[in-house]
Image 1: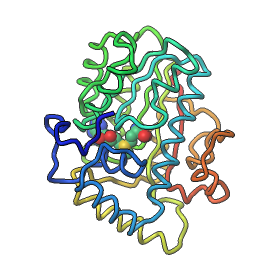
Image 2: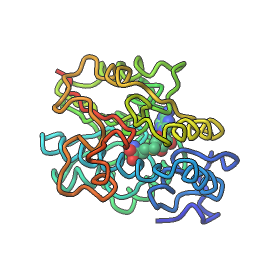
Image 3: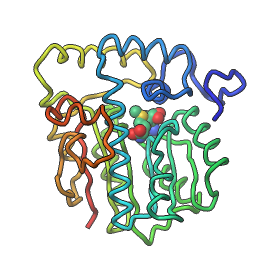
Image 4: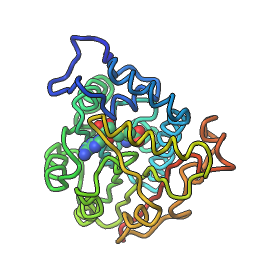
Length: 284
Ligand SMILES: C[S@@+](CC[C@H](N)C(=O)[O-])C[C@H]1O[C@@H](n2cnc3c(N)ncnc32)[C@H](O)[C@@H]1O
């Protein structure tokens, strides 16, 4: 795949004056769709909070386990909001490995993530089954309209809606609970909602506690500040859904399987070190 370091590959609309979450996250995961400004920010973040790369990896793995679980339940179409720069374990690849012929629409508001997804899908995807949309998930009706316009999703059948490691970028002023509820209302019955979120609720009271707050302050200077939410606030995202067992838990506690990486295994005994709450709900 083309790299972010290639000056010829700067997608339109990219803001290179400020570091951006999609590109920083890509750097945390070892990708190349990032620029010096993102890498410098990432390196500072690692200095402040060395666990951050591990947390990114744990989050990505949860996404993979969630898609695997859903695919085994027969869900074969996905709407992945805040899908990020393609990296190991992309949703359409996992879904296809279980249900060949599965469908997926990726959505992101960062032009680099969209452009890289497009490159990947042009190379490996099937235009009838895979698409990428540039849009802001805070506008559910616009996203829904654009996602359906791709012709990839069938609204007569259940859809796996994913918002992995993204809702914490939605500020309280943008009322994320109402946003999430709008998508729920649009989804056909039998659909699922898979999500994960950073929290400062129930995290270890140790030296890292201050770092978790310091890192948030650093992100306030990026184009993508983030917000911690409590367990109760996170759980409210599942209003109107039936929570799938084991309910709202720490990321490493959710359907852990033999494929878990060292990063995830390392925190199995102290799952709150992951700092990320996760859950899966089914719309009745
Ligand atoms: C931390 S990454 C997570 C990527 C992927 N979901 C995963 O779990 O590996 C967050 C992604 O959400 C995107 N994002 C943030 N706010 C968004 C918004 N309002 N609408 C759409 N995408 C958004 C960012 O650009 C970034 O690509």
